[in-house]
Image 1 (cartoon, rainbow, N blue to C red):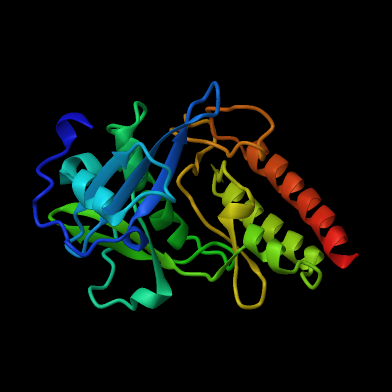
Image 2: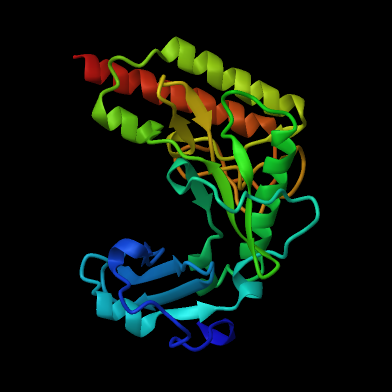
Length: 269
């Protein structure tokens, strides 16, 4: 974990459990063999922690967490606050908001480093722009949590259902025509602004209480032609790509709708 991590005893909660942390299992790219489990945590003072252990996440103990977690300096985990960022009201209703955090676990990987805070800043800036050009099927943005001069989280409306989970429950009563019309309208809207989402898939579409689609996760959204730090989800893209294009969204949306029709047909039988 190297130089970015500091003393583990720096006020780490002694009651920390697996339910409090985010867990990520790492597997070898060539053989698929399990390698290690990464875990990350943001405490009540908005400080980032990360650690790893060579055991499966199901076998990880609370003592493993407390032994291996190290605090990450703010500059390594979070982007610096900029003047164009809206502050989340201090007394927000936590139950109604989802706080999008930086991908802290990537700091433990070779491809991590400076792109972790950069990606969060770029997503916040995209959401600031979209807030000025709202659409009913794009997740509402409420501002950012800022501590010690750093953006530590992005405040978004929380939804209880994600599309892929919704299909595991019951897809038979979902109106696919309305769903597709609303999704395509939202995608056309962002394309009219010169932007592409670049990572549409069933995990990045939420559903509100009326089963209307809400597009979430704007970390790969860029202007057409701009290089991408991350793009696409395997299984939902035509080819690997590194430049933002509206064609990425159109291909992904076609594939999502084909998947939904197939799943609904199975559910209806």
